[in-house]
Each structure stands twice: as C-alpha cells, then as structure tokens.
Length: 123
Image (cartoon, rainbow, N blue to C red):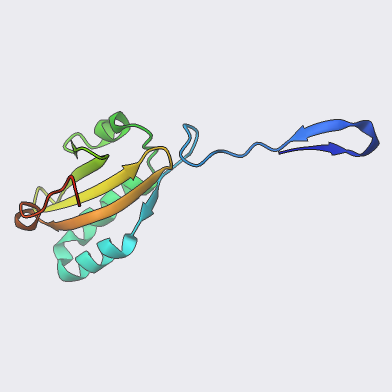
C-alpha cells in the first residue's frame, strides 16, 4: 500500500505480512471443536490434546522440518498430512497443513484401532 502525503510528496508504505509467509509467528488451527468433542468422549485424552494444541498454536510450521524438530514421532504422509501420536500411541491425530497459509486443519482424531481403519492420506 503506497500513498503520498500532501504537498511534501513523501511516499509512505504500509507493509503487512502475507499469511503463511516465513515471518508469520504461529499457525491457525481449524477446527478446535473436533478436539473438544473427542475429549468429551475420551477424558484421558484431554491433557495430551491440550498440550498438542498449545504446542501447535504457538508453533511456526512453515516446513515439515519445523514439525520434526519439535515432534520427532510425527509421521508425514502425502498431501501435507501429518500424523501425531497422542498419549503414548493410544490416540492418533491427523492434520492437513497448509504451510503457505499457516493453517492446520484437523482431519481426524481417534483411537489407534480407529486410525487403522481409515486412509489417513485421503481423509
């Protein structure tokens, strides 16, 4: 955005970060409700999911290596899907990440047995 200021012809620029650019500070998680609904059915998952959410919400995930540095057990699938192990592999969380936009979309959260029945790369 450029504009000139009166008679002195000074040009000022407003610089705003592009969402998902390298200088974005954190990611946006869509949909927190999915996690909340799951915690209501599996109370033992509440603390581990809150910990994951806190980590993710304050993360700067612009590349898979950023995730791997903080979550070494994370698995990377096609189509920018990432599988997180929750509560010592009792639960699995599958997300789709738009690195370019700084968004994390919750695609699945379930028990390990439920996870085995889905196609995590396509969900």
